[in-house]
Length: 339
Image 1 (cartoon, rainbow, N blue to C red):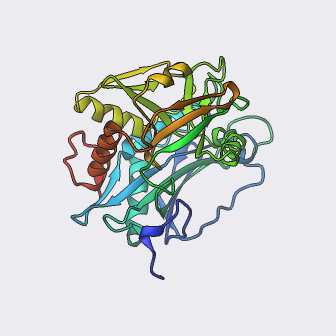
Image 2 (cartoon, rainbow, N blue to C red; image 1 turned 90 degrees about the vertical axis):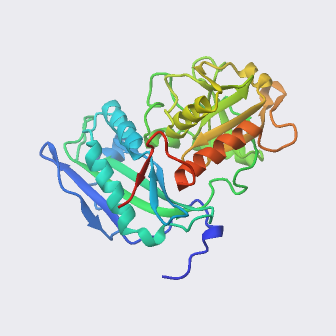
C-alpha cells in the first residue's frame, strides 16, 4: 500500500481491504460475511432502486495516544437504524449484529485507521437496502446489510473554523411528518439542489426553515443546529429533524458543564440573539457558524463578530474530541474500545 498522507485527507472515499455483509432471507438475518469486493450484485427490480427502501448510518473510529482504537457510540447508531427500519418497513437489524459488524470491519481494516493527532479518522458507513425484486409498491422480502470504512479528513476544508450559511426557502429538506427523522437517502437527494445553490452563492452550506410555515429553524444542510445564549444550549425540536447522535452528546456535555439545555421550536428571528451557534454531526463534529444570510429579506444574522469560534463551541468541541480519542475519561460509556 502506498503511503497515505494522513494530514491532507479529504472527506471522500478511499478503497480499503474489506467490507462486511449480512443478508435477510426467509424472515431471518444470516451470518456476517467478510468481503473484499467493492460492488453489489443486486436485482434490477430491487426495492431500494425503485421505492427508496434504503437506510444508512455514519460513525467513526479513532486511534488514541495509547494506541487503542475507539468507536464512538455505535449502540446509538444501531438504535437509530432500527427507528429508520420501522419508518420505512424494513426488518430491524439486531443491535448485537450491528455492533459485531462494525467491530469486524474496523478490525479487518485496522491499517487504514489514521494515527493519533493526524486530524483524520476512520469513517464507518453501515448501509441497509431492500434487494428483493418488487414491481408493486410493497416492502421487499429480502434485504442486504453492508458496512464499509474509509479514512477521512475534516468535512470542511478549514476544520474547526466558522462558516457562512444562507437560508434557502424554495426547497424543503423534508416534510413535517415525512422521512426527515429517519436517515434515508431520499432526504439527501432532496437537499442537493439547495446545497448547490448555496455553494454557487459562495456559502459553505444551506440553512433550512420548517417546511410548513417557513418560520422555524430546521437543519443546517445535513447537520443539526444549536445556538448558545445566556449560558443556554438551544436546539430545535421538530418532527422532521434527524436525531443527531453528536447533538445528543453535546447536549449531555453542556449539562455536565453547567449549561442549561433547551430543545424547542426556534423561530428564525431568534438568530439575532445568539452569542454562538453551530452545525453539528458525525462528519464535522461542530462547524461553528459565522453568519446566516437571509437574502430574500435582505438580512444578515452575524453570530461570530470576530469570525472565530466562540468559547462554548470551542469547549464542547474540545471535550467531545478528547473523549473520542481517549484523552479524557469516558464517564457516559460512549466509547467502544476494540479488543
